[in-house]
Image 1 (cartoon, one colour):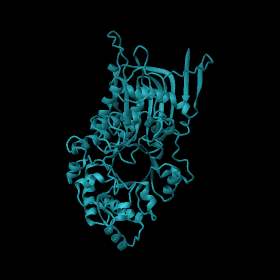
Image 2 (cartoon, rainbow, N blue to C red):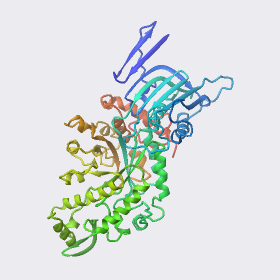
Image 3 (tube, one colour):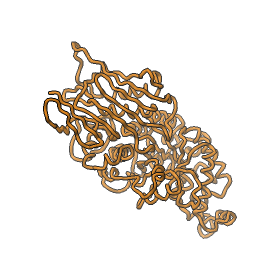
Image 4 (tube, rainbow, N blue to C red):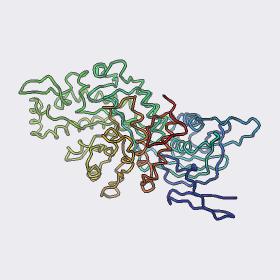
Length: 536
């Protein structure tokens, strides 16, 4: 019987084209491109399949590709994905058989092998799988990485361990260009290896930004060359619980090889208690009944020395972290200490602020934004910075994080002409059943009343995992596979991925793939995986 079944994601159904026999077979258990997570924008696939054998499978560059051999990003990716594709090679080799070669050929339009991914880097790719070969075309190496991930998910094993891939054509690109995960390394220190493992899992879900909330009130683990006392006195431990410059470089390099940007956050003027331990005079002395209480509040915005310190610190940060974005925080500033301090009140009167303390916060944040702008960095701020500033003159990117009508805030920010990162619906540390992944899937970032120009200003979203109750022991199961639900929302066409019921078996399959790749992703429901987690 000569049969060919074509499946189109755009239509959501199968059109069966049969020669010699009218028959439509629905094989829900068959492996198709629907097994790819996040779902590609468009694809067609058939029941025609090709066997792959490790000894005759090769990656290669097409002749016209701008990237060729010795492209660091892709050469390393070839080795990585070969190991992932053939991770459970139990079929054995038949020494009497003649293996048919299969080559995955890559063509890249731009040679950006030694650069870093940028906020506007293209991740578009086309993938075509046919007899004996597959073609992967991308504008950049970052798009090629996404295509390699997709190809690796297309490959499957039968019951005897042989590898197969189906005839497939895919055109794919992300719905949003900023798809991030925030990790908090201040409330609990995360070992470098735990961060690297998270970067691996991020690449599997096509996340492209690691938002590193590296310091906060509890500890200052970043080891500054300019101000070594910040970690020396502000970290949980000055030797064992710090990120040395070599550690930071390792994280940045590891992320680059997976097409992930590293966005550092140094949050101020609040969330800075750990800073004050190693930088005397930085924080505001709090008063009680007219005398110093011995406690300290936010960064002191009235002193010139504050801005001299910040200029030196961010000069170092700009040299260490190559990304064009830097997160400046600006959230949850406790104003009570400022209100109690006579010097702050005198400064406010001098500046004409009266008793409008949000104006003082705005004054401070504008100074810090100007410092980072002079370093050619684009600042990202939490939404309070926007809410407190009536003029909205800053060109910062605003991250919306508060609960409630978060799309109302998105609408206000975009109406002011500013770019938005949405985080509110993806706070994984909030109370609730950890298995309820659907709440993170049924999010519609553009479902607000606004113009098309406004909606273009929503550049993406972030999954946030704050560290009050998270360390290396539970990091992975807290993140995965719930974060993957958000990953599909940020990558895929929302019209094709609106059904939780249809997504569930696909996410179950992807969760099993994560386990097979060594990621401790928690279960979605009762069931099993063919390859259970072996790391215990």
